[in-house]
Image (cartoon, rainbow, N blue to C red; front, side, top):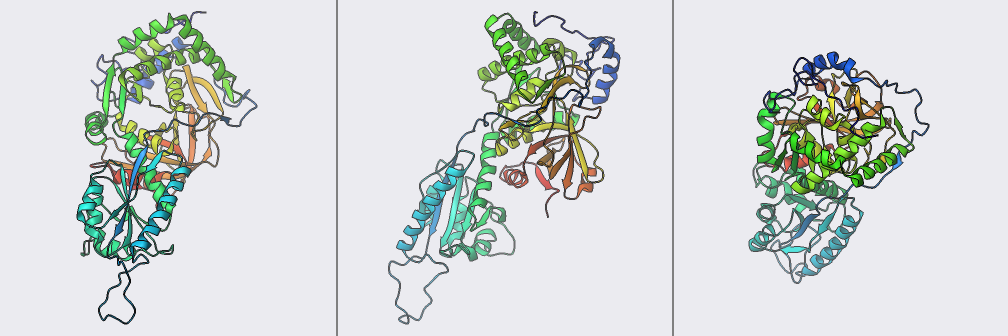
Length: 541
């Protein structure tokens, strides 16, 4: 049977399928989408769609276990330049009781030999740290900094992070600030792990506060200081790795940019460009449609999509509850999107007016499954072309090496926060596919979308971006249920770890959900982003 058979073309009193939210030829004309106007239109459209019944529990696949998949593709390697402060060293130590002046600085590193021994140890330890990291990181050769010129030389190097070891001397404040003047810095000191570092006492007074009572250094603050624990270095590096790979993202905007709110439409494009260095490549729906038509006429492409459809539906924890052709149509659309991304150098894509007649008619399915499959491959692809939720979604993807689930938020109560959407990725831990029903998109009751059965008890991070891009909020929680209420298909009830009542006054609407706890990494990345959004963590002690 031809994949084009039974293509749906829906119009309601001259409006598009989504009831007016996408009825302009310019996707940005109305300044955002209205879910209420979409639902008004879908009520009249219901009879024309031909629904596929959805019963979440009836006839479920016996296999409810995750299915192994390939790990996520890695990003650009993080380059770290270690630099050790080598001040107030003595070639030979004075003999006891031979001098009346004070000559010995704090710390267990007093001679060049002490310094060399510590450098060798640190280089070995950093190589081991890189080997056990699950993101690509390279430690460059250690630099010993004795003076301002050497500090400036380190700062001017080709690195993403400077890792400063505050080993010896009291005059390291000025040098440390210079070292961290061009790249994010981490300042490591030893307290209980020998040899004791002089920086343990100097970091506060001389480096952060510059011998005043306020933290005034422009390049280092208390969040950059690590004492003894290499693991504390690693998570900070992960945050900066995520930031490095998130900045400069190129978006393939199919049909143009279209934000879910007027504030988002007003602020997000400029914020994404100026703060995050985003680029946007617009491809019209007409151009995408021509590419898709050509792909449907190519027997090799069609055969490949048929094989992919069969492989997806053969997975033991996948249950098909819609027409198979919609899965095929989704894979065809994904192929075209990926071809365009390759041509444009993009790593993110979305469809403007994704619930509208133009997109659904062109694809012969809402793009929900298209987006979900792209996220499972390690790309980033979200509902609409809304940069407001794209920016935190991309950052979370790179920090966690997992997909971020963009979802609608719901009013919290009794410590429970609910999220739901239809374009839900399955490979939530970045490795294994969660059990999934392939169903219709909820609002249209048409096409293919994912109903993912999430792991109960799983810790998750939720990030909430403000419409005007001024603030992100976040909290940690635990999945307590994955229900099937009459709402967007993939749903989580999340038990909030923290002051859940603060969420009654949250910003924004769409949220990002990732498996695991990434709150400290997100907060650290935002601190290192010039002119970035403020960060509010509801799960802090």
